[in-house]
Length: 410
Image (cartoon, rainbow, N blue to C red; front, top):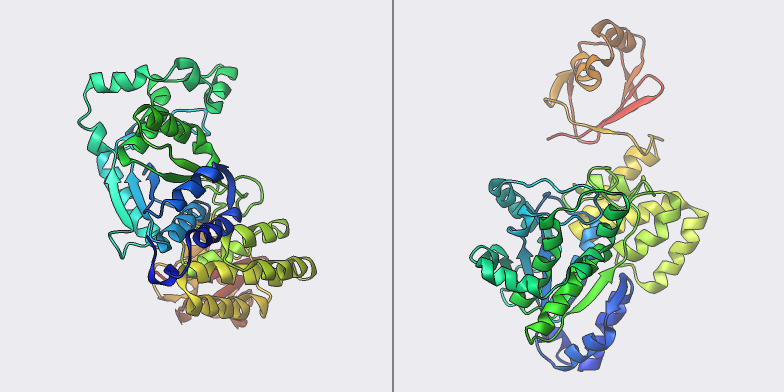
């Protein structure tokens, strides 16, 4: 299925375009040969995109897979967005040495709505022929015990226990619960119920999706192609992006927050982030190699601009770059200056500082600091503790020699 734009292209041209795009962010294909065969059939492919809605946030690492799916949508293929509302209540133990806590159905519904809101930033929802939303409670909610046991009869204990995180638990003499062993079976069988042709996942999901291929073969379906994608460190340069570590760039972050978080990135990751998280063309990437070496600060500003552009458009990206240059570059404000949201836009100076510092400083200390000229707003000293302010987004305060904060209004 091709859009008008691609009607003049032959199948090989389409295949080459997609593979060229995917090679930039893909890690492994299972397999390229099978994928080429599917494209040669000139039919609409069904791309499985399954998520457990344990936490209502996505970051740009998750979005690598989404952009690849978006590329397939643009060529007329359909994404099956599978909400794992049933499997969310069980929990995949991926990368953990503890069982995942079970969340309520009410929280699942809330998280689902937030997931869809964020996914709409990348995937096309404008054409029902290009996206379908499903829930795996559709089949597991009514599945009989005997039907489930028949699924389990197909998979050996030794196969399930070979999964790397289970092997890690065994080595650490940690418990493995039966519902955790069952989870890969459920995720794998989802591929049968969706008749999936292709899935794009992180490498931590490869075991489960390989079970999907196994079940599809047993049920007489063509096996899905699996593409695993590259994983980069978060903006701390250490662990992969995680909300708990606050080292991520979230799809739900504002354009300003996205820009600011990119600027915290270690210089050594600039090129990797350009390659994985932007649409900068290959010839330009070589220019970024030179820029990252000669002027890493400028390279990061270019990177931040490209990432904001991808999610919020060219106009917003230019505005955020201009704001950053005006606020930080020219005033020499520290890059890691925290954002602070006051309780009200109109506030006295003393009250604002009281909100910012909490119990860390007394009223008398704050009053003395102001009167001695130790508080600066946008390069202008404030010496009256009772001065009324009308705050604006981007106002920068310096308190003493070492404390800075930037105003972000609700």
